[in-house]
Length: 130
Image (cartoon, rainbow, N blue to C red; front, side, top):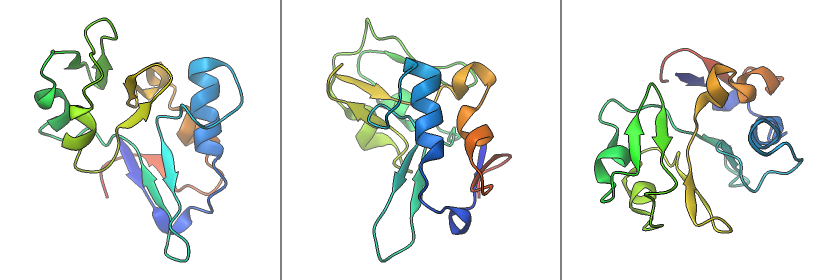
C-alpha cells in the first residue's frame, strides 16, 4: 500500500485535494480519505489507511459494513454510523464524514492512487509500510 515519509511532508495538502477531487469532483479537503495532521510546532503526520494485516476496522464493524477487497470497502447501506471503525484503526487512517454519517477510508481511488500522484515531495508513495 503506502509508504509514508512524513519528513518530506510540507503540509501543502495536495493529497487531500486530489482525494476529494477523485471522489466528489469538487475542491475541498473535508471529505478526504487521507489527512494531514498538523500539530505545529511538531512535525506533521499523514493519516491514511495503511491496509493493516489484521484489518482491525473491518473486524470491529458490528454491522459487517466493511470488507477487505484489496482495500477496505464500505457498504454504505449497512453502515449505522457507530464509529467503531475509527476507534479500532491503529494508525488513525479512518476519518468521519459528519454530513453523510459514514466513515471515510482510502479505497485507492480505484487503483489510481490520486494522493500519490499529487504529492510533490514524495511524502506519500506506493510501497510498504514505514
